Amino acid sequence: MATTLLWRNFDAQAGDFCMSIEAMPLYVDIERIDNEIRELGRDEDGPLEPAELFPFDQIHYQGTDAVERAIRLLGLDTVSRVLEIGSGVGGPARYLAHTVGCRVTALELQDRLHAISARLTARCGLGDRVTHLRGDALTYPLPETAFDAVVSWLAIHHMPERPRVLARLARTLRPGGRIYIEDLSERAPFTASDLPDVTRTIFGVTLTSADEYVRDLRDAGFVDVAATDMTSDWQAFAVARARAWRDARDRHVRVHGQATYGRLERFFFTVAHLFESGSLGGLGLIGRT
Ligand SMILES: C[S@@+](CC[C@H](N)C(=O)[O-])C[C@H]1O[C@@H](n2cnc3c(N)ncnc32)[C@H](O)[C@@H]1O
Image (cartoon, rainbow, N blue to C red; front, top):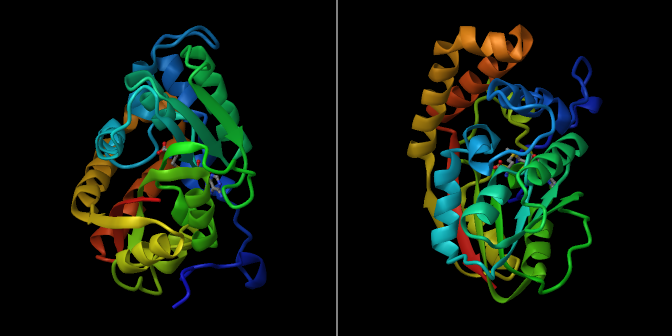
């Protein structure tokens, strides 16, 4: 079966629209990071403590607990050379550099997110340990056998051609290097009424079963591949996140404005619904070269 189950070219469908990843609700209001920093009472470009940002710079499930999981499972230490794929505004990369002291190369597709991440990392004084690169995981010239570990949170489902991405990641790892991925999965077929939210709201380009994900990792050259089903914890997280957002509506409207509040409210409740439908799932995947 084809790996890419869900790929919609909205250009080709009358009455639809051509959506880019930048238009996804999670990214369109990325200035919310600056709003939160202002709310901390910090100025526009002064120094920051990495830990001040952790409550809002981790764009995945379970915040820094998820990064701690990778540290533990991969056995990262100060000498580890780590590549993060789809690094967002740099939250996990800064957490790794700050808590473990390892060197992190963080590759991010979107210009705006890349620019924010580089700026925040410099303000946190972590520029000597985190290198931010702007580029596409499908095409960026990754050096061969250069990293001890590859990590990725909630990014690969955005990418077409997952087998090609994973093969590139296997080549950039040294022999015996390890990979840890947290990503979305498809546990059961999405209903026709949920498909527009899968494609537009969460930009799910490649969503498959756990078995297909494991097979793609093995085909890419990884061994000792194992998948852990994270669905029930992520569902609980997604439901609590949506409720907490709505409960703090007045605060969020004051800090971010009505439009951003509304878009994120819809996003958070849509994600919670997709988990509750039984179709959206979450996976932790590990392997080595
Ligand atoms: C949900 S965010 C997660 C960000 C970060 N991993 C974190 O957990 O905070 C997924 C990120 O993957 C990036 N991304 C999507 N496709 C990509 C690609 N082809 N190459 C590099 N990054 C990509 C997106 O732009 C987005 O910033």
